[in-house]
Length: 475
Ligand SMILES: Cc1cc2nc3c(=O)[nH]c(=O)nc-3n(C[C@H](O)[C@H](O)[C@H](O)COP(=O)(O)OP(=O)(O)OC[C@H]3O[C@@H](n4cnc5c(N)ncnc54)[C@H](O)[C@@H]3O)c2cc1C
Image (cartoon, rainbow, N blue to C red; front, side, top):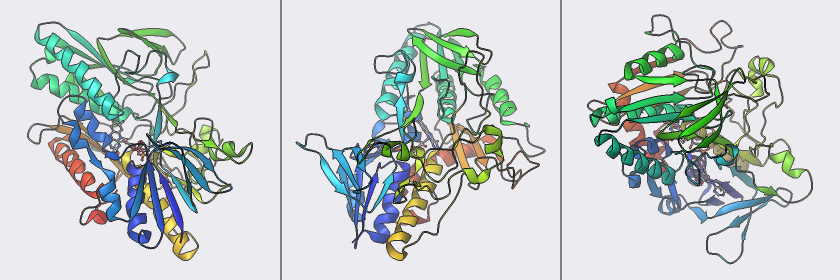
């Protein structure tokens, strides 16, 4: 009987758990370790953060779902891995001692560690800015925002600054969606004229999103995502600054350094800034040096990528991006979603004259996390049943769709729908087209996107609860 342990039940881990449970659950021992006993649908935190969605609608209890798939849930934090003896040590809330879980195959799907400490004064825990990265954060952002709404209703003006809170932050798409939703919400409340909305980010250009932006097919209403977003922000009356690495936040003031190394400040009454993402590094037992074979310095799991290439060379090497997400030293350890170490940035990196790296880190969205989670699960199933793997997909071969809503109304909502193929430009496949397929890569805005975004909430909540037909809903 094979023992499989999955750490993390987010998009990557929960997707993997369903596939593993369906194929192996009855005959083998599948365990999911997760910090919480609930799954959280993070993309809808944007709507929680504007008060437009009840928090309860973004989560479901994991145990009843995993029970149906013959997968055991252990609620707790995986604290250590012993890769030689193949076990994981788990700290469980309220339990006297730690639990030792043996594995034959381990999938690390622990998502990001939100590195608020990387920016003094950032974040809702003792800092001065808000976040929407966890449900309690989104609820806190909502409460602060609604207080501001009350002040605006009493006639005060307010300045809301949304963007990234670290020179190396990623997830600009979530921040973009949040600022668009704030705009829409303020319009609906008749308060838009009382608010200054401002975008502040580390991107090289507006609409870069950490994926190098996109070039539209000929005949589109804008040539690039930068022009597209510039037009949208102009229409919404949102001002913007890019190429800024936030270094500190104090009450009402964000301190940053720009591409030229110049310091500057942006004032705010309310700010939501995405922190830098690190990996959830666990301690590694079994000998000196083993930790560095599994985790990179930022805590992401090293897999089968080619690490350390200079950016220009990385751009010309699509095979540098991982294909089967297995650790080279310990091939029975897989990593999926945000947990795996990418080989480098997708966007053009920049270092200011003072030596500050201001570069949007590569995003791994929910869709990408789900795809890679499924791929890892299918390879583990292959290994258990046939002794070899047969699945691989690099981010230089993978398509992705992202929908950034503007309000959640099905009648007057809107959304920017972004399609990219491949996510990481592949100059070997598309040498003359900026590395991407011009027939697929596109960005559009309209009401249809709002319908799709709402549909995604419902279909993913359906899929990840393993309800009938779940396996036919693509990640
Ligand atoms: C506000 C917001 C909006 C977003 N909107 C979109 C969107 O519209 N579309 C999209 O595709 N993506 C979106 N994303 C990105 C998407 O949420 C992430 O890409 C996705 O959640 C990554 O999945 P994951 O499984 O890698 O990590 P997660 O979903 O973060 O899951 C990791 C899990 O591991 C658990 N965990 C961590 N460490 C341990 C440990 N040591 N032991 C046990 N458990 C542990 C965590 O508690 C968590 O349950 C958004 C992100 C944010 C913040």
